[in-house]
Amino acid sequence: MSERSAGDNVEVRRSARRRSTVSAYRDGDRVVVLIPARFSAAEEDEWVGRMVERLRRRERRAPRSDGQLLDRAGTLARRYLPDHPATAVPASVRWVGNQNGRWGSCTPADRTIRLSTRLSGMPDWVVDYVLLHELCHLVVPGHGADFWALVSRYPRTERARGYLEGVSAAAGLSLSEDDDEEVAG
Image: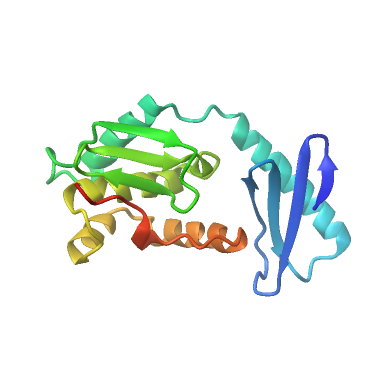
């Protein structure tokens, strides 16, 4: 881990499997930048600077409030779950900081959805995927075929799942989508 600019601890992770893409995310107080192993030191410096600045710009945007998350849940439910107008409506949606092993959770019994604050700096289409995933649990509590049929209505499902798997792998986390909600009443 090295200090790249005032206030940012930056960890650079090189990967032989990564061919041309560069990505970055915040993990606590540090920024993790993922680069191809073949990059020179100069390319690393250039891309780390670029990605740290991109992350800062994204973070300057105000994160969605819990109320905005609830509004977004309504929009997603109307768009992707229109045949479930009564069941795909959460009582509340909120950010929580205590979900270290999951991206989101849903308790169907009280219709609450919680999203990990680790999602707050990710692209909106990834947050939307996790939110829709949890909305689908209000309709189908488990991860059976009916559940995945609902989730697959979101056109960026596979892309978002891949993004989250990549972030999890890069961070050394063992997040399992099959463990991501509370389905007990």
